[in-house]
Amino acid sequence: MGFPQDRPRRTRQSDVWRRMMRETHLTPDAFIYPLFVVPGRAVRHAIESMPGIFQLSVDEVVKDAKAAAAAGVPAVLLFAAPAHKDARATSATDPKGLAAQAIAAIKEACPQLLLWADVCLCGATDHGHCGHVLAHGAIDNDSSIQTLAEVALNYARAGADAVAPSDMMDGRVAAIRARLDAQGHATTPIVSYAAKFASSFYGPFREAAESAPAFGDRRSYQMDPANAREALREVLLDVEEGADLVMVKPAGPYLDVIRQVRDAVRVPVVAYQVSGEFSLIKAAAARGWIDERAAVLETLTGIRRAGADLIISYFAPEVVQWLRA
Ligand code: PBG
Image (cartoon, rainbow, N blue to C red; front, side, top):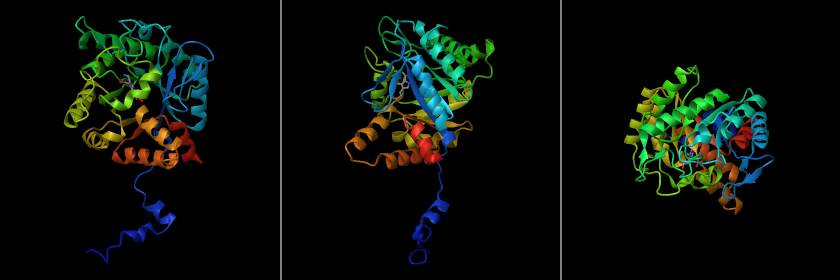
């Protein structure tokens, strides 16, 4: 068969047809909203490269968490940029540290909102790398994963509903799982940034999280954007180590990876629409070059169609409101 018997346009004739034929749906429960906490009180500092996104002190981050929850966002992902930064990321392992304070405050104000805590060293280290740096500048994997496990335990104790390691060290999921289990947190899930690429799209985030590396780059731990087969290897290793959810990051330029991961594992797949993906749309929309809402929904639908079960997005509160309206 073929034309003229085959006419795919028959089922595209009207809005009701198009709705009925739709294969992919965005649902509010699929969205996670990132929040950035900084020291101080009443701080609401705009991040220039991410219009509408702010660095917030604990009191203010609680307000935005409440607003996100009220809008219908089911979960937030918390990043902390503490004032004190040192070689060992002690602010991140400190039970009175900024992240721990923010976790406790948000959970107290919004007990129903799921709080995922990003686990990394870069926001709390003076060198801005995601692991410990050796004298000659290399990143020391095996000592880093012990510290990352301490960070995860600190956040679980503070009340985090899940810990999300974003460092890309080898073996961190197993180290975190072992530490959590040994300390009474066997029920805290691990959301692993399993296939995280060394991406130019993290630029705006590094302003928000104050986590740009002081020297070098992250290519010795984050993945080469050219590698999909290696992404599957990373994901399968993390699942074996005990990851409850696995993530692909960034999302838009890696839709093929999302699809391959979705087909390879049985755990939920999360995709992170990162800061640069957000800023591109915002910048074009601000110039009137693109319809923001349509572009946002199209990118998110594409990510979902590729196989993402859940999506982390800076557009989350707006999108959830659009979907509920
Ligand atoms: C830090 C981290 C980064 C992001 C999440 N966690 C940046 C990086 O690896 O440099 C990026 C998020 C975004 O760009 O929105 N480990």
